[in-house]
Amino acid sequence: MSLNDFVLKEPRALPIFILADTSGSMNGEKINELNLALREMTYALKNVDDIRGKFQLAVVGFGGEVSIVQQLADIGTVSIAEMSANGNTPMGEAFDIVCAMINDKNIVNSRSYTPTLVLISDGQPTDFMSNNRNYLDWEPLKKLHTGIRSAKCQRLAMGIGADADMEMLKAFVKNPEIPVIKANNASGITAFFRWVTMSAILRLNSVNPNVASVVAPVFDFDSEDIVI
Image 1 (cartoon, rainbow, N blue to C red):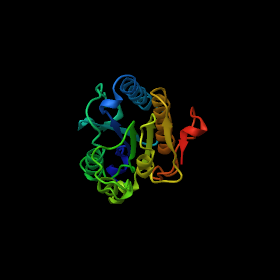
Image 2: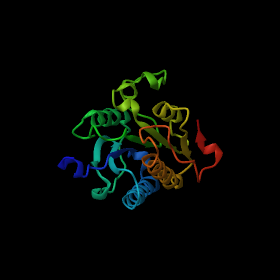
Image 3: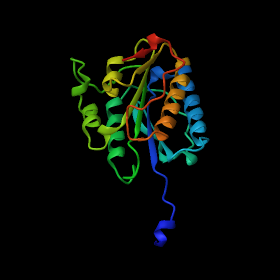
Image 4: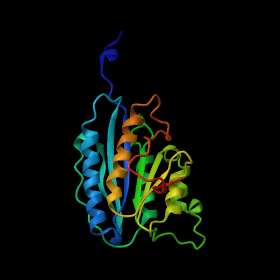
């Protein structure tokens, strides 16, 4: 038996990437609720006991321009800055940035479990330049779905309000075993992130945390708010 047998290995990480719509239409109650929900999720994940690994969290906002609000970091060190809302919705650029982060082994360690990507939006991508609305052929989304590492990610999504592009969100998730959640107003944001939190905990404690279809039962939502 060597000394290496006694060295504790670093816990394997489950990275969570939040892609947050921070365009002008999110201003007011929606962005306030989103900031609150992210603080609650961070606190909950910091205080989970008896898990097989550790959580990491990154937040990418897209409103007017794309900004990395929180670099991927161990959950214990995360402190997310308050986000404001303005500008258009460069969702495709956000996909490109997150895809590059996932495929960078200096950011997502090779030992990490496949990441969870969480998309929340109340509108349509303003950088989608096609009239046929075939999102699966959209290059930024296609790269997410076909990348060597990003293709394996778990993807969760929520649309807020009547203007949310549910077809876009369904194309993002692209998994018949995982529903897309919709909410009529800002009050559904906190419930959505509680579901995301419970799904992350369940997945990290599962037999195989790399299985992307492992999610918590959908709670706090009416049946019409669950879109397959």
